[in-house]
Image 1 (tube, one colour):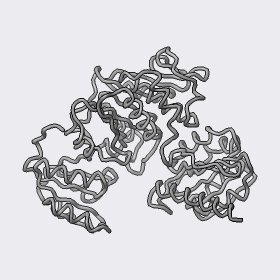
Image 2 (tube, one colour):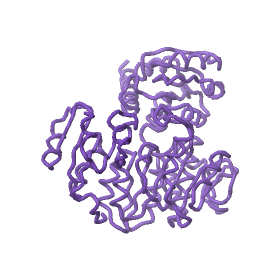
Image 3 (cartoon, one colour):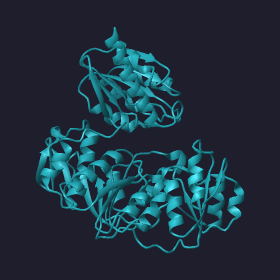
Image 4 (cartoon, one colour):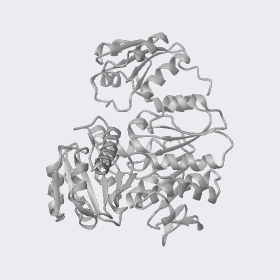
Length: 458
């Protein structure tokens, strides 16, 4: 960890008691800061507050009192999910107080080699693949952290100058990371996500581009080259651009051509041998391959990872086979694009479980994918009627309403046959019924296991 003195005797407010916020608060105390920790909710676990107070941190819970804005805080470390129009945060914006996220704090103390991944879809899989590949060819520690559920600042504090950290960074984190400077940055793709937070697509794009704002020509930006817009976005970076293309649009980096994977003309492996299914995972693999090759990883080590890695939980995760049916948990598909690519990964007939939070959009874009891949659909959640409308347009013969992703499982089973895929890929956020996509996916898996147990007891 770097010797950082700029927080010594500074007054810092940490907003949010998530994993990153709690680690940031304790780290800031080690760096000599006078820390106040605030959360709108009161933690159910009293040991959280006790741990903060025992570290000399003042704790305020149950609200975000506007009176905090009257204190002379030097820095605010904000949970990434708290919007900038939050009344308290807006007060600090008005006062021009420095507002950062825990990712920025992690970067400030990190002294090793930084690889960072962002994008609308595929971040977690790409981050995991990249970490596994680079670790194959490294005698020093290679870890991952960030939006993948592991605190950036906590891991950064544990690593030395020869170690590597592969970080998944969301647009929310990047908005508050003004000095972050990865040597290798990856943008997997950019769709129109989180516009309720960012307000406009251009704001969203600019947030993503913070991953490369401080890069120079000595650094690398690995960019999806399969859309003209993404190519134009890449040209806004000062870094050396390394394209990856599933559609064979460039040979300057990693690419797929005639079912084979190459790095700058050098054959790596056949795409069909990648254990992860679907075209989106070919793209994730291509992005990770580029980072690995730039890091000196040998081809065989890359192949070893791609032929054995079976996926990240909730991201087109294979669950089990039973009675000729194959179950997949893709609860992380919280937007239309993710479900589009998930459906493209299957040649077998699909019984789709879809629905969730109504964000105001409709699902006509899914109609061609429904027609080609889906034999039956079980819809649920706030947007189930809109999902039904798209299913009717696609002339799906079997359309079933259910309460949620749990009750949908036995309904899907009733209309399934050997050879079918039963796929949870909701195309919507979970918040109308579940606190997170992780909880939704876990409950789906539990429902599958319950179903199998009941079938075997008959």
